[in-house]
Length: 288
Image (tube, rainbow, N blue to C red; front, side, top):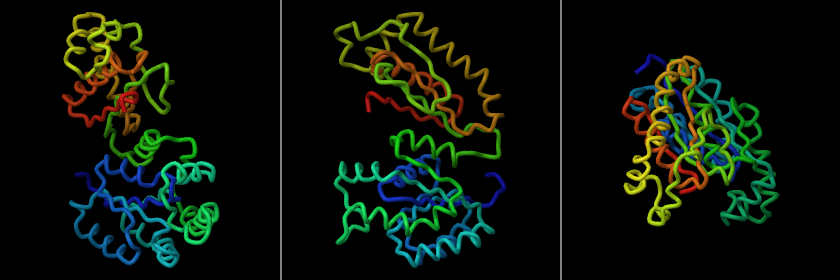
């Protein structure tokens, strides 16, 4: 374990902005995560982090308007003092009013400040209460035009940084070109020139993780060569990429439907990285 002070991320923001998804993204990075921590318990949590740094090395705490105005004011005042003892980052997640109204309408969840007022008034009140935290934030993340997967990538990039020249996580994503190219990727590979299992009636309902599809694809030398060329490329260029202080690397592989070729290749590439000791996550956009 490197010799540094424990790291604490305070994650706050507007209800419906994506704070819970951001907290889950930090959990994927190995953070010890606590959501909706009462302000009165924060000093005890800080004490635990300081006295047990091996256990609480990276900690993320979700704190929002549910704390109440008094605890929010106390938190804002305490941040400077805490920062002298821990590595502290404050991340504020928000969205515009139209996005928030739409999300609450779609999920039919109740806004925590909705009592006798309408949703619009509750959002306005929450913005006012949280403004001191927003002004103090180290990072403000606007999720108005961002889906859950893009938000997770943003959080990984913001918080996943390290002083070491080391890639902490590799994300390999499959997708269908017909549904658009994913945003926020570092490398993109086009597998549409490869033989397509879609035209085999027995293979059509399966995907690139099924053994029948794997066996069929691996009978074609161009598929194997394509995969090996990608793996060979990254074995050559990962060290320079890591030297550039890149903690998260996102690779996307696309085909026409995002079901067979891109899924197979993503799984195979991820497996090669795992054998080399990297932390790897796969995501199949069209299958999910």
